[in-house]
Image (cartoon, rainbow over all chains, first blue to last red; front, side):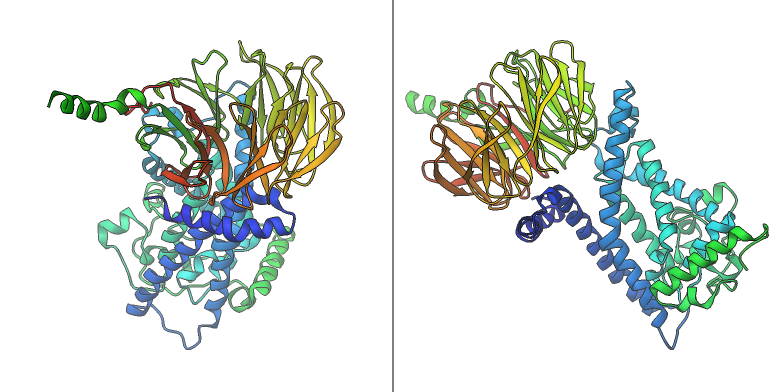
Length: 315
Length: 317
């Protein structure tokens, strides 16, 4: 029995993409398209699983009920664009090329590029174990990226788009400013290069972590219990991070998937209980504008930070 | 009764000594499938680091070299057992071949846009040729003086003089040149962007004629008796036999699933990797029928060693 994703991607490549590429004289994109379609399929499956898991939860025990869900639809657009279209293409194409270039250059210099399997040969062939280990390392790196995004005014100006949503649902995880996404991609990419994440695993790792992050944004009264909340980030734990009290550099609970880093570096707060979300200091367009209005408002806020003296930011 | 017992014994025991090993490189596995040629079953998988694509036998026949591109590593396997002999850091080894005289090894770095020429004995890098785009396939002139490399993401074929280590010429060939093969004093180039192979004058790169084989002509192979040229067409999903002397198409076979590399088994059957189907096809060119073996993800390069004993489960390290 083969890998159903790989076989489905192969079928689509053979019957849909290659005929199209051939017809339009783009066969030099054949390898890239084969990889993109695989990761796009992972993205579709991940959105479907997220939808199937989170939607019933949100109907079961919602934290908030809103008369109008219009603001949520923009987040849906962010999610589809990010997980099915742009993310798989860029994470694969850019990361793959950068990985080959950098590690090839290192090989030329006589250095063996670092990999977990190189450090621990027992891991060679243990793809599931290395996958989990790489996921833990990337989650640790993401904790620091996220913490820094709240500390620098210019970075917060971009990141505040993510926090502006007052109707936070499982769709909200991907509502980010494009520049914030670029920074996150470079951050993840560099770390992944340094620790030798296999190029073909990188998009899958990102998508797996993102599923758990989607769950943590869900509009649901859900805690994993005293112990569970300390093992995996629950919607209750992450909602505290999105609370209006938590916007800006006085936030807490920066972790994305694992709360261990917040506990280790004393930024965890298990006491805040299903708070209201949003960023009172941000413009209304960041919360309820269209996709492009949100992007524009974020960019303007970002530009304004360079002309003002340092002050505490956020609410 | 004694004869019956002997017959049963031979029937059961024969695969152990009559088989042979097939090695199939699963690019996305990333791994190498070890297949028992007698039973046509995969018996084990050898894990690789990141993304292996192709493999060749060393001139002395003692090692099978497997290039792991993103892993920047060359693996050396025992061609009779599949046991890993050693690993060596090599930058982006995508497609590579020894020169006919066995003295040089040319390695195409597909994504690093470089063609590296090594001294085969010492594996010392003699020359790096930077190229405009994605060096993909290669072939040598029989006297080992020239190597021809297709630059897949461009429309070009480049020739390097290996005596002076200089570029001889670079010429446009079709749209997306892929497989390259020296045949009867000419260089043949499969053009994946069109439906033909280009016949090129090795002296100056001039295209002499086009031979239409099928959509997305990708890879070229010469039969062991050198009479038949085999062409895999990626977009058309076909494998085509061509008379090597006249370059006339003989027959087309439907091989779905992205036919790519091939090798020839004793008895005339042809093994073909099906990139998009996680399978290897075994084509009977007489009947046109093929059977398939399940292997790993994105099978690409393959190598048959029919003289090897049937494999038991080989070491995976």
